[in-house]
Image (cartoon, rainbow, N blue to C red; front, side, top):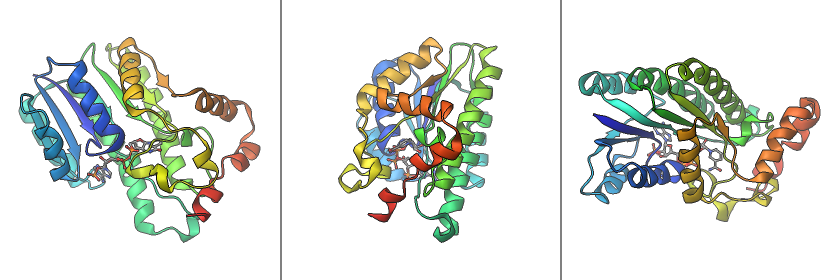
Length: 256
Ligand SMILES: NC(=O)c1ccc[n+]([C@@H]2O[C@H](COP(=O)([O-])OP(=O)(O)OC[C@H]3O[C@@H](n4cnc5c(N)ncnc54)[C@H](OP(=O)(O)O)[C@@H]3O)[C@@H](O)[C@H]2O)c1
C-alpha cells in the first residue's frame, strides 16, 4: 500500500501540502493526515470523498502518541512514498518571561515530535520515497526573542542534513524546506508587526508544488524567495556575534 503521511495537516502549510499531494499523486492508495484537531482533519478529508484519507488525531508533543502511530504502522505495513514532517509550534517573547509550558511545547513538538516521526516512518520508506521536513529561516541565525523556536529549527536543520546522508544510500531523499513568512495560524499576516512584517509572505500553493518537485529530484534544501536565500548566506558568512543583533525579533514581539 503506497501512502503519503502529512503531519500538521489541519492548517497552514500542511493543509496546502495535503491538497497538492492529492493532485500530484493520484495513484496513492491512502493519505494519512496527522494533527490534534480531528474535526478539522475530517472536514478536509471530506472534501475528497473519492480518496482514501486516514485521519489520525494525535498530539505529537505527547510521547504516548508515538505508540499509537507505531501500532498503526506495524499493522498496515505501508510503503510511505511521501512524508511531510511539518507540524510545528512557535511562541516568541523574552525567554526569562516565557511560560514554561510554551517552552516545552516547542521542544516537545519541533524537536522530539519531528525526530520520532522520522524514526517511526523511515523504516517504511523505500527507494524513490522522499521526505520534506519543515524547518525555518529561524535556523540560519540565532533569534533573540524567539530563542527556543530558532534553536529548535537549528536542531531540525542538523538532523535533516545528517539523516539525508544516511538515507541517500537507500535512494530516499530528505529535503529541508526553510520557509520565511507564511500567512498561517502561526503567523497571521493581519496581526504581523515590527521588523518581521517587512519581509515577504510566501505563496503556499506555489511553494508546496515547487518543494515537491525539488524533493522528487533529490534536492537537499530549499529556501523559497531571494530575500530569504540572501539571509541564509548572511547567516553563513557574518559572525554570529554580529548576525544575532540583526536577527533579533524584539520589535515584532514588543509591538504585539
Ligand atoms: N508561518 C510561518 O511564518 C512559518 C515560517 C517558517 C517555518 N514555519 C514552519 O512551518 C510549519 C507549518 O507551520 P504553519 O505556518 O503552517 O503553522 P500552523 O498553521 O499553525 O500549522 C501548524 C500545524 O501543526 C499542527 N500541530 C501543532 N501542534 C501540534 C501537536 N502538538 N501535535 C500535532 N500537531 C500539531 C497544527 O494542528 P493542530 O492544532 O490541529 O494540532 C497545524 O496543523 C511549522 O513547522 C512551522 O514551524 C512557519
